[in-house]
Image (tube, rainbow, N blue to C red; front, side, top):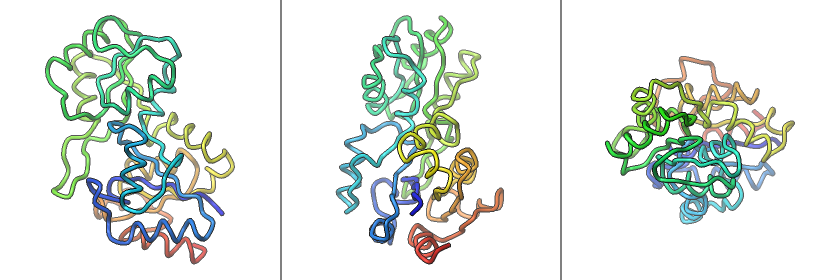
Length: 252
């Protein structure tokens, strides 16, 4: 059975409110023997918080949540000083990597991720560190983030501010880029990753991530980009995760 890689926001839930049919779809896929792994560019929350949020809607997920924070942490070396212009999920991942997380001053790297308390002072600290020689790493470059009330600025919007102010091109860790692909391969296995199905609502992110992995892309229209599948041809095109599960379980 091949793995099913699911984006979270716009596929499983919107602001932690489950999309109708998604919880049951995950259960059916798992019951049929498919490993379901959640691959998200949301870097702000700690992994255990994301696992708990999934458990709260009826989806056990311990060990099955992969975040762009985890991918970004792999781009720094143990012992390096890293300024985190990001949420708790990035701080957790960097600490697990063995980096020294700092809030200001000289740094070897700056990691920018989505967080609600981004402000001018934080922009200044991050910019100063990059101008001082720190590498600039973005957890992801998604311009927006989906909510039930519509898109709001995403991690890519915050990263763009630091990149513009510092005149630096960042390295991006999350989907659709190679660091996240390597994280998936190391989790499910290299052979399994190549035959997986990547389920997402953003062809520009999730679809291209499937290309990076060399696997199939299943596009759903329950997230931020309804109708956007025209920019690439998905292997599966469905209204939601329940529709994708039906195709996969039918052998598609």
